[in-house]
Each structure stands twice: as structure tokens, then as C-alpha cells.
Image (cartoon, rainbow, N blue to C red; front, side, top):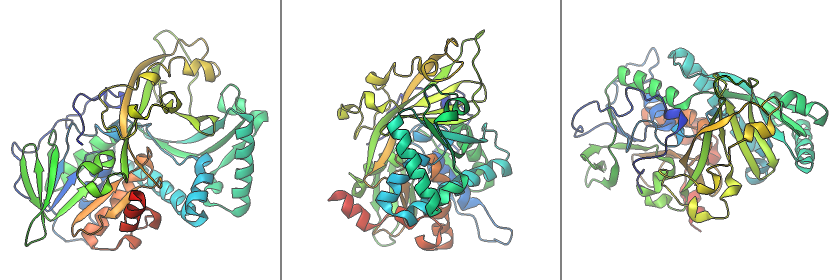
Length: 441
């Protein structure tokens, strides 16, 4: 199960970086201290954290090999919604599934990712159109709006961590404040909106300038073998083999292709998004917030307005959900999901005030592969039963919200030798044999 060639063209990848298909050396190095598989936000951030030194740190830098099956950031990070957010309206399910304490830890972890990415963008002077914004979960259904209000009040009374940054807008002002026709209620929270591809590729530039790092694109890993005697690994690719004692799997939906114990644990699923533009000579109100449109509790689209006035919109799952052969356990992002191909046409005119006569049109539609887990939580940490394999994958479509700080955790486990419980990542996200066993049951 490898990423396929000729993936659909994502808006985020419309301005290829010079590193897009870069190879640091003509041939693969025969060995590396650390091999990282995947160059999305998870893989590149792990390399960044491994090389990020404190002032009093005199330890030698490890040699790092970054392997990418296709182009840099051509997987989920280059195909997603472009913002770091935890949906306020999904907190109820999170509390029900994982308990209030764990849910609170997850919310705080998402917040740490928002400000962690913001800090590194500022520190490294990365130009990724990053912007702290408010994001509205907007209920368009009265029954859903009523439930959202009741649950918000419950969380407020209980002092749930997210509520300190959460704003509620009722029906009286919901349309005016959100600019959405028929809005019945809205919950807003702070998010970081950004251009993910630009963030990752520019962070990768900093990584390559910092130390002994070798990038090899269009180099698919096909097998991992444990070496007899030294306990290290041989990584086999379509271009040769590399020896290493440590492997980091930043492989998300493709993980089970290399780690069979994650089959049916992290399942590849296909999703779709689009880029909507307003024709030259036409105009539409600028939207300064991002959105999740809740037509019902289980029918949700997301929107991320860009600084140039265009909009990235994703969702439409209910158009193809009843045909699982199109999207479930599918790792091919070279084709569109046909039932959703024209779903985004006219969406802005239907829902947003002032957009009715804008002439807004769907400029492009693409697909991407998510890694979905049975318990809706990512798998982070040391792969159970191994000596030097680490994983950060299975983000259930929300990798931006977890990956940067998950990468810090994995980097610290490798560099400092600390156990998972000292990383600051919620314990419910640790990859364990128990979680693998439950998912297989």
C-alpha cells in the first residue's frame, strides 16, 4: 500500500517549492542515525525538533534521512483544510468516548499545537499566510442548535477547559455575526489558519540548513527488516537500502503498508476538498473567520477563507458515504469522488450573505487520504514490541491539530530517552499493544 502517482491537484500545492522533488544526494546514503518516512507536517516537524538545540546542548547532531514516496508534502498535509482547530461542537462525543479528563487534555493539546506552530512560524520567519482567527461552528438546524446550546451550558457550568475561549451566539444575532443564511446558533473558538504546504516546505528548508539531513523524494519505502545481532533495521526502497537503528513512521493513512500490526487500526479513507474563487470583475464580502457548517450533527462542511478572498471548502461526505467502496480502506488519491465532484458548486451563494451574485465558482476539486482509527485518536510513541520504531499517525482528518507537538514528543523520546508519559501528550494517544488488540478485536 504505497502512495499512488499522479495524485489529484490540490490548491495548496499550486505553487511548488524548489524542494518539491529535491534529492540531497544522487544516491541513497548507506546508513543514517534516524530515518523518517513521510514529509508532511509530522515528518518534517519531527526532523525540526530533533535538530532544535538548547543553548547548553553540546550533543552531536544525528544524521537524519527523510524519505518521501512522492513529492514533499503531497499527502494529507498538502490536501487538508488548512487550519488548526478542535471543533467545539464535537466535545460532547469526546467526553462521552474518553471521559472529561482526557477530553480536557486533548483540548489543551490542540491549543498547544496552535501556539506551537505560531511560535515556530515567527521564530523561523516562515511565510505561510498564518493568521490567528476565530472559527465558528454554525448550526443551520434548530434541533441541532438547541442541543449545542444545552451542551455548551453544561460544559460552562462544569468549567471544561475549552469554554474559557469559547463564545456562544444565539439565533437572535447568529446570521448577522456569522454572515450565514439561516444560522440558528454559533460557537466560536481561536484557530490558526495557514497554508500548510508553505509551512512544511519552508520548515524543511530550515531543517536542511541546520544539520546532517538528507532528503530523498520519489523514494518509496517498500519493506522494513529487523537486522540480526545489532537490533537495527534495513529500510528497503525502490532505489536501494539504508541501515538505521531508528525509524519514525510519519505515514498516516499509509502506515499499515509498512507496519502490518496497524492494519484495521489505522485505515486509509478518501476525502475531498475544493478551492472556490470569485471571477475577476466580480466581488464578494471578505470573510475573516473560518467555519464549520452544521446542516445536521452528522453533516458538516468546513471553510477556510484565504487572504486573497478565495475559499477552501471541504466535506460533502454524505454524498458518497453510502458507497464505502469509493472511500473506505482506499489509498488512491489520483481520482475524484464522483458523487461529490460538483457538490461545492454554488455553495457560497447558497449560504453566505452578500455572495448571492458573486459568480463564485469551483476552481478546483481534489482528494486526499486520511488515516482513521477505531477510537478516533492518533497513535503516537514507540511502536509496541520494537526497540527503535516510532509512530505519529492516524489523525482522523485532524492532523494539523496534533502533529507538530506529537512530533516534539517523538523527538524527545528519541533524543532524551524519556518515556511517553513525560512528553505532555495526552496518555490516551499513546500507541500501545492494548489499543492494537482492541482495534483488531
